[in-house]
Amino acid sequence: MSCFIKRFIFVLTAVRVLYSADVATLNKQGVEACNREEFEKAVPLLIDALHASPGNPTISKNLSAAGCALAYRQDHNGSPDTALATLRNIYSLIPGNSAVRNALVALLVNQGTIALRDNCLSNARHYTDEALLIAPANATACCLAGDIAYRQNDLPAARAFWEEARKSEPSNRFVAQRLERVGKDLDTERSFSSTEASHFDIRFDYRNLGNSIFDIRDFLMEAYNTVGQDLNLFPSHTVAVILYGEHEFRMTNNVPEFIAGLYDGKIRVPVDFSKYPLTTLKGILFHEYTHAVIHTIAGPSCPLWLNEGIAMREMKMPLPVQSDLVRRALSSGTTIPYAQLGDQSVWNDPSQVFLAYAQSWIMAEYLFHRWSNSQIRELLSRCKKGTPIETIMKEELGRTPEQFDREWKEYAKSVLH
Image (cartoon, rainbow, N blue to C red):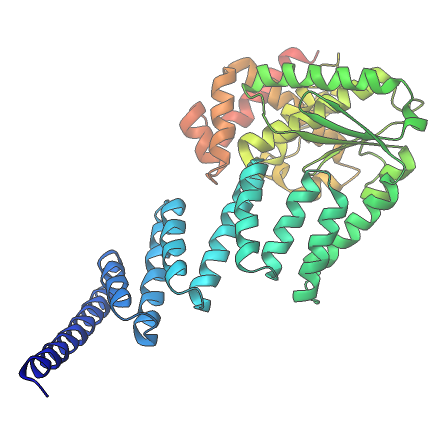
């Protein structure tokens, strides 16, 4: 063997030894950084190590642990987009790692859920599509995809996604409830027609409404402008509106007789002109659309009394409640305590619900009488962050619950003669 060849083999051996030493050093440094919880340093070191030794199972495992820990910290610190970028990068390097895949899918679903809550349906769909591309059979992702399709009034697609979720988790009761609900909706809406108005997707039974559908379209567009001005929000997303016959409304939604409308992500209203003339129906549509706007501003955290009170106020009817109930309660000292107005059981109790509506209405009237629309909008916005309403009222309105309770009663006595 020539001296040149021997020298070349020696050089290759030396490079291989040096190369192995560098990989071991990078991996060791990455692990040490992890142990110090310096994940921002650990991840680049371990990525370099993996580039130097592709497919190395030890380095892959260490990178998975460091990457998931870093992404968790980033998300926890309020940077979910950064966390997603971290996981996407690591997943591209070790796509077979189940821990990284599961963490990425979970974060995508979480962001999709937030986007759906905020009525950003295109964003919600974007996150969910990516999650399903990575894990097509993931039950949580399938369930969320169904929720999005359902909100968009695509009932067949919603059922298909939820059926897929049930295959992965047959005993999931939440999926079962969704499938039961969409089954009822499909049965009820099978013969429904549809029409679109600005910002509304309306489903209805033409046999029940006839040409009154044009009045209803006008009411909804008026609500969009009027409620939007009062609450300083004009949503860009489309709101689904389902108009039922009286019997179908009760059966499909399982609601008591005193409920004349419902908002659960969609506006659902019974149309029975003998019971609800067009002028009353207009008020109901304004009421339910107000709930839709409040949900966009405050999410699900708006207190019941505030949500219902503003919705009653926005009905724009001469007197949307039985004000004599409030007068008698004020006279006898039997108003519903402030703390109880946030309790769902009060609103489910036929003996208290009408007073609850009337009392919440006058409380909302006092809010708009005493404070500006922008202050009330800020109050609602802060509800979305999960801040207790008592804290918000103290900081934004300068009132404790006790002070506010005393003041609305004085206002009510002065205006409800």
